[in-house]
Image 1 (cartoon, rainbow, N blue to C red):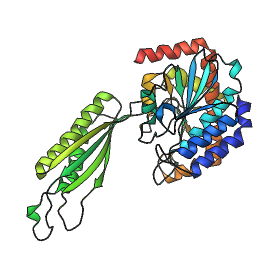
Image 2 (cartoon, rainbow, N blue to C red):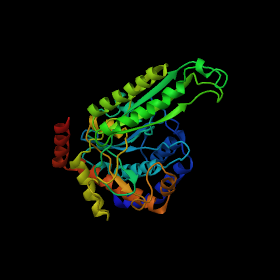
Image 3 (tube, one colour):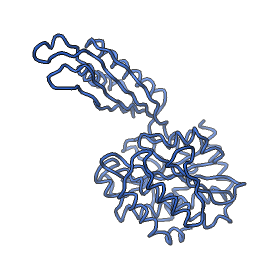
Image 4 (cartoon, helix red, strand yellow):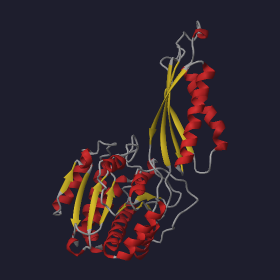
Length: 382
């Protein structure tokens, strides 16, 4: 399988660069989805398009359909303004490489491998919608990798919830008769201050960050409308709910103090990541044999969120991180990281990830003891 990845190397690199040069936002990844599907089909495997009713999702299968099923997941959406600053172009190419390498040995596999294209990881919950549509039904395990500044096998990801606050006050001329107004913006800003005052009460790992999306309509008018959006993150659902309630309480308190109304919309986000250690450690062994020794985790770095967390609550899953730059040089969602996502080092890491995932998937299909350990660990954590 390593040889297959190497033989496909230039093709995979071209795919990664092509996606990088044409960044597409959540659910608008029509070019990337088409390019990946066309490449897989040219290698002799049919592709099911519009998987789960999502136009930019897809699935390809190879192997023995009567045995265990392993899914390798591809992401390919970009970020506004800074493009592939999360390296999803490399995630996609690595997943394709692993799948195509395994498909060349389809007759020898003790089960089947699937390439699932999952759109809209950046806030669009593509995997959540695919789960709801039944796209992961019957799959025994799922895997992907993510570019980073270091190699980590099993790093946590935080559960999330999005809170949208819309404040409604009363307008007035800001110079002639400001006393006639009720400032929605004042309440919006006070909400930020109240939340900041509560941070000392949050558990370790909690993150609350927000932006003002509407700060008023004219500088000489007391704002009658203002709005903000917060993302609440926590390691566990219970703490997530507690902190989300604090954010809501702060908003209501600010509205009361400023004499305005507030409408609160809460949108469920992603679940925390349950890394399957039995599977992650097998991936780590494959990685080490390829010359990369990864830490199991690294408490020095913080955690983000991913819809792979939702998948990991439904079936055994891994989401390891692999370095495409020096430690501390840059991080996801930065311009410099986007540049690393098409660098020679980034492309080489993509090849190594493809090989390690192919080896791990093959082991899972052929080693009944490993599959049993993976299943037992997952069952013990549900």
